[in-house]
Every structure is written in structure tokens, then in C-alpha cells.
Amino acid sequence: MRLILTQPALVAFDNDRSFAEIRRSMEAVAGGCAADDILVLPEHAVFVETAAEYADMLAPLAREAGCHLLGGSFHEIDGGVKRNTGALFSPEGEVLGWFDKLRPYADERARVNPGSRLGQFQVAGKNILVLICADFWFSDLFMQADTQPDLVLVPALSVTRKPAPDFSRRLWRHLAISRAYEFGVYVGISDWAHASSLPKLMTSGVGGYADAAHANPDRFYTPAPEGGTLVVAPDFDALTQFRRDRAERGFYWRSGK
Image (cartoon, rainbow, N blue to C red; front, side, top):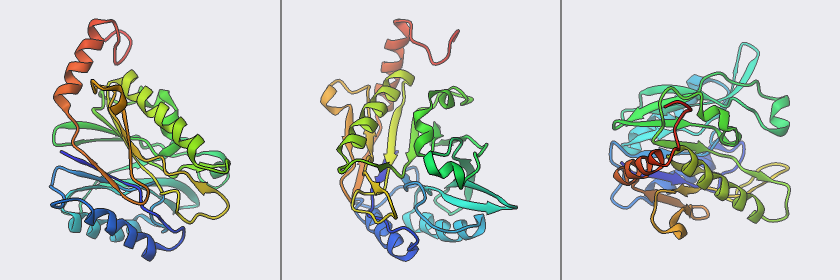
């Protein structure tokens, strides 16, 4: 299994231009994608209003990629309720399950209702937890997972009020390493590139991969390239050894286990 973590330069409300950037991200994967790979899109990668429209756009992309597709998210309007939601697609374009943003962020709270579906999936025998952007900052959501995740995947749309992206990038990097170390997981983040076009706020491009099990601390976090794609192959044997070592020293996935 490989993770294909994208950081495309997206354009708000322009699905055609954004999809062209997403396809360039896919084409950057040397040799193409394999069925067990997971291609991760950023939060709000597409601008539609219904689950049907979303699936009609993303299912063909999953088939084109030939791998699992974590389709970022969109703002769904259903019966007067608006939620930030997304789906995991199989390589054949089948919806394997849905996930919601449980803790809308900042001004989003006035436009989006909190969701209820925690993203829990299995791909190639590995447990996956999906947390949309700001949800990653709430450690209690990790504890709601039914089983210990091996991978935590974060579709993000990071924003900053600072004049440059460095502040947000460092915060996200430190958080991702801390989460990876605390919970014994690998963390993959896909985000809008800093060069993206978003009204009012600036995006930060915080995408990357956290591997606290690595022997070299300089490799704890690998940032995704600006406007590009990061491809990583998680070493699950190393993760097992890391967890065993932590358990022997009194660290646990949940208290009492």
C-alpha cells in the first residue's frame, strides 16, 4: 500500500480548473497507482451540493486512478441541513462509506452543521481513520474510533491570517508528529497548495506525512511539495515494533488496554 498525498493548486468554485490540477497530481505518480493505494484529495476539493453530484464526479476519477480514492469533501445540502462530508471510493468507483466533519471551524460554524459520521474504514487489512481538517486538532475524536487506526488521513483546507504560510505549516507539522507518536499511527495530510485561489483567506499548504516510528528524527515529517504530490509507502512492520516498544513502557491505545 502507498499513500498518494496531493497538494494541488485548487480554485474555489471552479471544478474544471481544480480537477485539471488533481489529474496532474495523479499523473505525477511514477508507474501509476495500484489497487491497494489510497489517493487522498483535500477538503472541499469540489464545489457541489448533493451526494449524487459528488459521486458522479469522484467515482470516474477513482476508476481512472485505479486505486482507492479518499475524495476530500464537499458541502452537502440535504433537507435544510448543510454538512461537510466526503466518501471513500473503491478502485471500481464504488462508495465504500461516508464521513463527516464533526467540528466545523471558525466562520464555517455559521454555514455548516456538525456531522455525525466518523470516518472508519479498512483497506488492504489496515484500519483507517479519516478526520477532516480541524477535526484532527481534537484528540477526543481519536478515542471515538472502534479500533486503533494504523493510518490517520486528513483532507485539509488550511487557512491562515498570517502574511505567510510558515506559522500554520509549523503548527500542523508539530501536531502531526505528536499525534503519530501519541496514538502509534501514521498520518497523511492532503491540502490546498499555498498558491491556491480561495476568497478572503490564504491557504497554507500544510500537506505531508508524519512517521514517528522512523529511527531518524529528521524523517518524522515529510512535507508534500507545493502544487504537487507526495507518495509514501508506510512501513507497517516498523509501526508494529514502535507500538510494542511503547506498550512495554506503559503507553496504551486506550486506558486499561
